[in-house]
Length: 134
Image 1 (cartoon, helix red, strand yellow):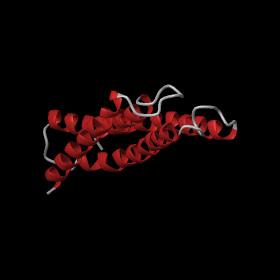
Image 2 (cartoon, rainbow, N blue to C red):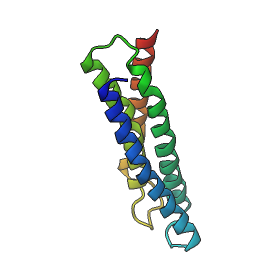
Image 3 (cartoon, one colour):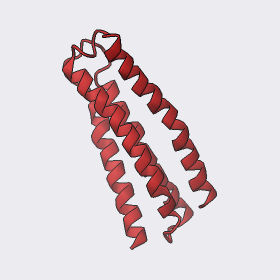
């Protein structure tokens, strides 16, 4: 693997600790019955989705990254694809979490648009990576 891919994988692995912390926070909200989580189905659903997307997309990026070194792409294109693969777990999760920050929020605010933005980054990154491999 290239040094850039190894570095990116290292950063992604470090972010797993933040996902673990988030999961623990969600668990404590349930166990301690913290107001604004269990009694707010919109917030509960979006925070659960944010946590799940972060975990799954970090694993996906870690699996996809080594394939990037098998493409004939230039260093600049590889950097772009790396960014497109690393952005979704961050951007999508921020959209889920920040769209219902206040415990009283019953509908998402405009930051929910970060979710499809992260999805677009995921689609562009995987499409570009796939095209580079065929």
